[in-house]
Length: 131
Image (cartoon, rainbow, N blue to C red; front, side, top):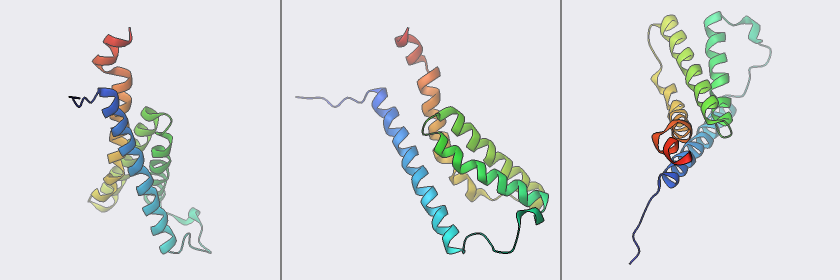
């Protein structure tokens, strides 16, 4: 009788693919919402934005590419995304007095990528068995 055995590598690959799938789904949703809203406004330039609006847009601009970068470099992409979300939340809090918590849905795959990066590079298992 065969026993079912999940090694830590299989679990890590499953977590990695869950993060990648969530990344693709989030980007598809953002593109659909962007198209639905009519894309970029014509006749308006980004130079007319307030500083808080520019910081919020900039942090959003770095959050999604950070998820794509995490496909190749998990640690860097995850940290870039999390830093962008922290910037977004901080600017939003100081400008409006509240935090838009929905944006942290983008942080879920970033946390999964960060977990995979940590487990691959710094976990006790890898330090013992790689040497």
